[in-house]
Structure formats: C-alpha cells, structure tokens
Image 1 (cartoon, one colour):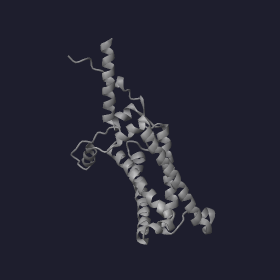
Image 2 (cartoon, one colour):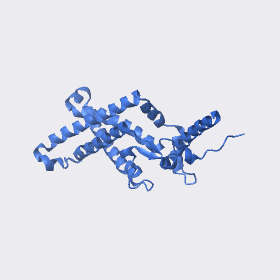
Image 3 (cartoon, one colour):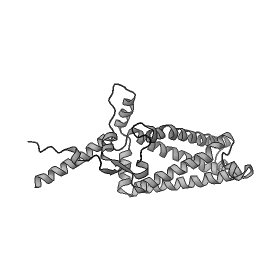
Image 4 (cartoon, one colour):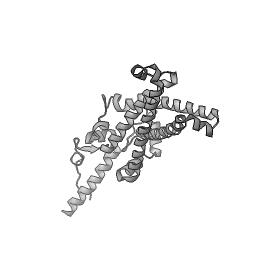
Amino acid sequence: MSGPTIDPAVLIPDDEIFVRMNRVERWQHGLLAATFIFLILTGLPVLSGEVGVIRLVVGKTCAHAVRGILHRAAALVLIADLFWHLLYTLLTARGRQNLRDRLPRWRDLEDALSVFDFRSARPEFGRYSFVEKFEYWALIWGSAVMIVTGFFLWSPGFSLKLFPLWLHQVFVVIHGYEAILAFVAILIWHTYNVHLNPEVFPMSRVWLDGRMTGEELRRFHPLEYRRILEEREKSKKCIMERE
C-alpha cells in the first residue's frame, strides 16, 4: 500500500525563494557584462576605421592611443574575471555542480530539435535549458578565441617574429569577426531571453538578486522542480514513518 499523498504546494510553496545565482556568481556575471560592453565600445569602431565616442572626449590626436589602452585594460579585467570563474568552478562544491549541470547531453539536442517541430510539446528543462548551456559554452569558446588572437594583436612585432604576415592577418580577421558574432548573439539572443521574452518582460531579475520563486521554478525548470519535489517527498515520508 502506498503512503499518504503529499501536496506539492506544501513541499514547494509558490513564494519559496530558491538561489539561482549566489553573490559570487552575480559579481562574476556583472563584471563580465561590464567588460564585454566596454570591449565592444572600444573595439568594434576600429573595424570601420573610427574610434567612436573616445574621439569626442580626448580629441582626434590621442583617440587611437587612448582607445588601445582602454581596450587592453578591459581585456585584462575580462581575463581576470574568467580566471576567477575557473577557480570558483574547480575549487567549490557549488561551482563543480554548476559545471555538471551545464554539461551538454543528448536531451539538449532533442529539446533544440523539438523547438522546430510544431507538433511537439514544449520541452521541459532541468536546472539549465539547452539555450543557457549553449550560451555558456559559446562564451567559454569565444573568450578563448578572443584571448589567444588578442594576445598576438597586442604585440604585432612579437607575433610577426613567430608567424608569417598572412597568419597575423588571419588573427586580425578572426578577432574582429568573433567580436561581431558575440555582439550580435548578445544583442539578439541573450537580450531576448533575459529581457524581451514575453514570459519575463521587462526582464528577468535573476541576474540582479539571484532569486527564483517556486512558481517560476515550476514554470521555467519543471524537471528541476520535480527533482526537488521528489527529494522532499522522500524526506517527508521518512519522517512520517519514524513518527
């Protein structure tokens, strides 16, 4: 005979708060966002031969030199932020769990394909959807490409001692077009998911306060919701049996 049914609303109230991003993770994300915007503002104008708003502040004569200094300084901050994230991921239990939850799985591919099949029901996500996983790993890959190519662009003389001119020019092209790709991806994809999606408009506040309610967890991450519910049901039943 099965035990008594436990009301899910009792185990996970709609107004219960779950920590989606803790303070460290929000600081890492905020620093990443700030440096990304700064790198875009000081980097993309160069592709058209301009130096953007920097020229209005420091004048045309010093604009290129100042732009280069600001761009390199922002790059160093970005690298430090990524290194901080790497240490956090490897050295903390939560960081390692985040990594495990972000690993791609076959279900993610099935979920992605089901989006284009209008006959399929809406896919259910665990802690991270396939979109969030793709964004995360695209960030890691894109950052690695930008750091490696940017290193050689930082010192053209050193780069030309190691590589022929045509390969150095390839670094220039890759660095520039990867920046454009990242800018477009953030502007269209990430901005829509975090701000313009009708389900969260005008924006999701997770990146600000790190919190998600039980109702939001059930709506956006039903697999994670059911996992937590099952764990609490087992714990509750064990307590009831002992009593």
